[in-house]
Length: 426
Image (cartoon, rainbow, N blue to C red):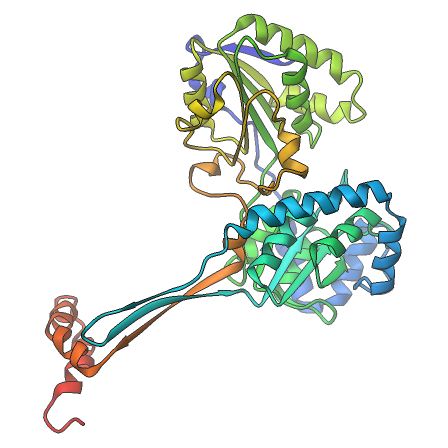
């Protein structure tokens, strides 16, 4: 049964506690990374034998296999993925930015140019479920950014990738797909092997081993974020339907046993009705065992004195997904400071964002929404600045630069500017 907690009557530590997240996989992941770095494909084959039921004949998925998978997927699902892809493209195309140039009258020219990373690496998980939606969410922003090559790694149980994953890759414009999962996939993307090219940036969610591997290779390559267990926080008033609120909480609880589902409300009757609904719906949920472990481990209903307090609690928790199930949700949006993605109103379930609306579903977790953002086109670009000063322009600031340099004890810096204006220097 989900816990009902009264805000102000119990310690804040219990209100804001997210659950134990320490995984103790650092050494295991480090060993896998070192092995793949040293032995390349041979290490990947050993990992596939241990974790995936056997190594594929070849790691790269051929064009024929992708076409056959596409043809095997239910046409209605293909149509749904194509419609979702159109929405994702439309939303992320608005994120494109261009560089700029600032030209001064004295001959100084400053600017910034935008370019995509050369090779983007996508990780698409495939543990307890397959996620074609993640393919669309990760690949489409990279394609819009203009990445010349988009590479995807995904687990292949007994050498097979789920057809829907390959169909999504085709729709999203992925250039190459590889049958490798887990920490070893992150190693292959970071270091490169005989079969798999080294990438510049790795994005996408995964289990604790994948998250730890991304953490350990960061610096050699860029990463999007360290994704933790999925989260939903719903702020709901007394007018909300307890059936819908319970269903939305369970939509995240079914992801994995460490997922977090939280309701914050100013209505005790709603809290009690939602708790009862969760129990009723759990019995009907195919992934009910996973969802129950999540609800009983991390789930909670927080009852507070007002919706304003409820939103303040949400800001403190900084959830991955935040639903505002209340009147005038746009009026409350300005009060929200920390959340990965916000779902406004009673007819906007979190699943809408997971699959179809267009905003990205790769979001900051574990409270990192306080300082980080959803996956976007920005994740696949880099900015290069440039400077040009004509001799006259440099001469106008020579003295200032030299004073700065000598104040920092860097005489060589000062002389590098002054030397251009010494007698006899052309």
